[in-house]
Amino acid sequence: MVGVVACSSVSSIKALWETRIRRVQEEQQEAEEQRKRKDRGGATSRLSVGVWEDRAVLARLRQKLQTEDGRLVLRIEQEEWKTLPGCLLQLSQVQEWQIHRTGLQKIPHFISSFQNLLVLDLSRNGVSEIPKQIGKLTRLRELLLSYNRVQFVPEELSCCESLERLELAMNRDLNQLPDQLRNLKKLQHLDLSMNDFTCVPDCVVMLPALEWLDMGGNQLEHLPEDIHRMETLHTLWLQRNQLERLPDNISRMKSLDTLVLSSNRLRDIPPLMEDMSNLSRFVNFRDNPLTLDVALPSRRTETGAEDEEDEEDDREMFGREFMNFYIQEARKRAHAILNVHRVNQPNED
Image 1 (tube, rainbow, N blue to C red):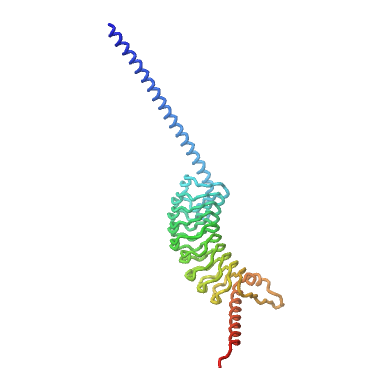
Image 2 (image 1 turned 90 degrees about the horizontal axis):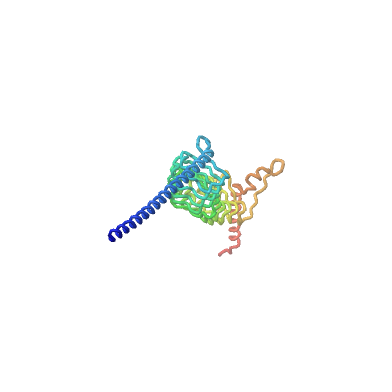
């Protein structure tokens, strides 16, 4: 009888503990399920907030759309947009970006999705990098990144086969270009002014369609001897550099009609440039330490007064007339020195 009672007591205690354990497990399971439901609710809430934020940003961007000359243009100016949101992909039909003075720091990698883009103008921002994905924009005609912080140009840019205009002025630390850029067969306009180039990159000389080049305000110390290979170039800005001489082959640039060389260190003007009748639009040698102190003869009208308009147009600006007069004067003085040398040379009996 005693054994039966003891066995019954043990069974009761065991059942009690099993009930308690099961109840604790059920409570823990219920708490875990509540936590999961709460997390799902929070995530859904955050997702909903994110969706509404994207919609608000997208609506704001749509207000920046304009139609100009038949193109759909995204124009943002003087607003803070340090980064461009992913929802911009919903406006992939845009053909032109005009984003200025926004503090934009980078071009998004999803730029490659804008296959209709013809003009990408991001001048006067804080862009420090051109992404490799830019090479996917095979229809892009203009890339304008002046007054930014670009230090490196990727070789993938050479894949933008339709590019006609490239502006990289005033990026300060930019001092080289990838050789692959010579493959830009349609590039006509290139602005590399106010950077840190010490020479004209070889790829620039080899651009087959280049017509306009500005490398003023760099640190150019010399020009390439084969500069005449730039057969289509008609405008060349080289002001405010460190040039001390010009290569003779510059006289073989038959398309060149505008040449600006002010504020360099030129000592002379190559005599062969006298035959450059194509330099008919503008040429400027002002503020160079030329060896000869040459002054153009005064022009007088029928009344005896100087023609002030002519003085303003090409004489004050040290134009083509000055160039030719300087070359002629240098030749005269060289002949005079040679004659003096011959006169003073003792005769041999």
